[in-house]
Image (cartoon, rainbow, N blue to C red; front, side):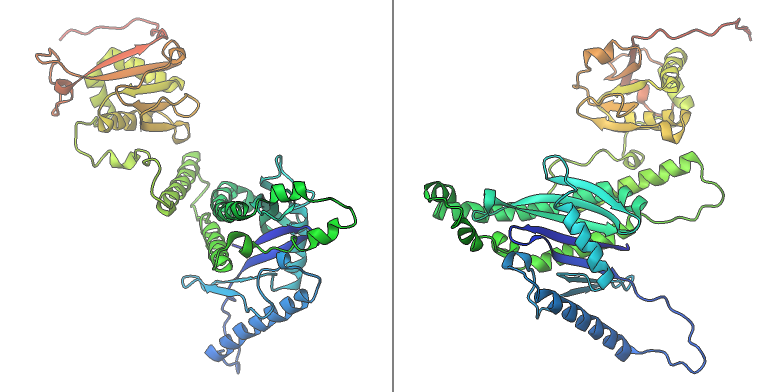
Length: 452
């Protein structure tokens, strides 16, 4: 992804400053060698990398000579920075306090100033989007870090992602917000532990209330407390290495989550919906796999697992009509086609999932919103196919609504008079009760009867 991630800080002495920056360097596209031109070897590539490192050091040294305090500095001037190489694509991720290229330095500097001054979301903590075609577009997330020596016992930071593609950055908003919050919460929780330990040793609130305030002495009192680096606030021994890994992964994952696909002819609406849902499922799967500390809640019932699980299932719409009966099936199909919420409640998720799979064939792909099996009721705006466990109550406003139909799947009593019309034992195992507050319209016209 052609973007850049930076950590910014609002210094009490020097204003907004860039602390740490990670950028991606794409390998040059191969070109056919000209006659008489030699192919560069490993020595040339090593020389290029060394040149990049010298450029970073020279640019960083020039910046370090400026007026900077400890709170404005992340890496020392002699530090070469961090480099990670993606073995699959050859992309190199470089991290240092400032970007390698001078034109990027001014872009990041402007994004830093705007994210910590004029572009502020309500509450001063949270995500915001701004930018233009000339200076790039910015996704910014501001947050506070606890500091027992700072004014107000907290310092203001922001993480910005700068890119020239506005549409791509907006489409990546949920992905960026979810993963940047994980990084921010990790920094805040670590700094909070340090803050609590310092307050136990020397409570600063009582010290400030008991000290005499003088406008002439106040700047000298504040000068020793304004320069605290993020490393000292978190006491993290490998803070910048960890941020380099997080930012590098974010750039790689954000660049690979949205890809271009070659379609023959104009894509249909169903194709676009399927591609969008596949992307959402891949993101949810990556979140479950990358969650730390185990899963807090089990993942939802997967639609694709129902076909492999054992148990009685509906095989087709004809099969479903045979089991429910012609009149009940017609009532159920009418609710499906009208867009009403169809609720199946029973103890067999496999059976309910198979019924939904058959009924979905009556609707376009974009009109299907399904929750295969849940332990709580979901509103109609979230799903039009809802499977519930047997003990879930239906709200009164839903059961009395004409825009809802409920199918209760109950265990069949012994000696049931249901005929067995299929090869499986659905009718011998379950009974079905369909209830709805709506009155189903009847067909107009005459119906001819034929006697055999």
